[in-house]
Length: 212
Image 1 (cartoon, one colour):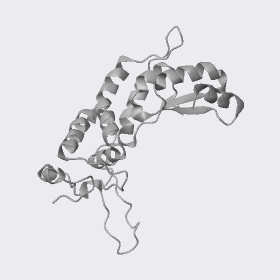
Image 2 (spheres, helix red, strand yellow):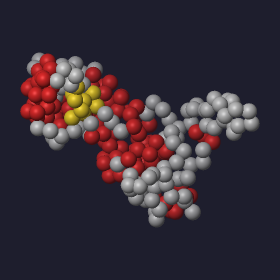
Image 3 (tube, rainbow, N blue to C red):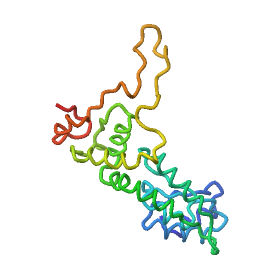
Image 4 (cartoon, rainbow, N blue to C red):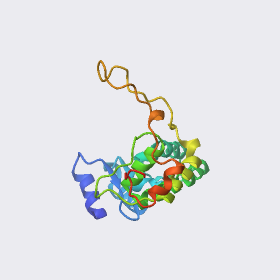
C-alpha cells in the first residue's frame, strides 16, 4: 500500500490508529508515515521477525512482532531499547546493550528467514516447548542434520536471554484426563527424536519424518 494511501486511511478512518509495517525498507516507511500522519497515527510496529528492530526503533516504532520461537529474547532486546530514552532531536536512542543483545539473536532470526514456519517449530521443539516437529505441506521445508546442529549452537549462545528453558515445570494437572487417564506428562519425559546419535538419519528426511 503506498505511503500516501496509508496516511489518508489513518487520517480519515477513526478506527485505524496503529500499523504493522513490513514494506521494504521498513524504517524509511515508518519515518514517512509518522511524519505524514502526525497525531492520527498512535504507533507503528515492526515485523519481519524483528530483523530490523534497531532501525525501526530509532525511527519511532512502538513495538515489534517477532517469531514465537525466541520471543522471550526479543523482549529482552526491546526492554534494553526502552532504557535508552530520546536524544535532543526526539529520536529514540538505541543503547549499546540493545545492540549487543540484537547481535546475539541475529543468527536465530536469519535461520528463521531460511526455513520460515519450519524454523519456529524446530526451535520450539529443541527448547522443549513442543513434543515434535511435524509440519503440514506446504509449510514443510527440508532441514537436514546440520540445520539442527546450528539450532543447538545458537540456542546455547542465546541461553542467558531465554527466560524459559527446557526442563522447567510444565506438567498437565493431575486428574485432567479423568479417573484412569494417562499419567502426568512433563517436557523432560518427552523423548527428543533429535539426539546426536540420531542426527544422521535426519540428513535424508524432512522435518517431522521419524528418524530411523
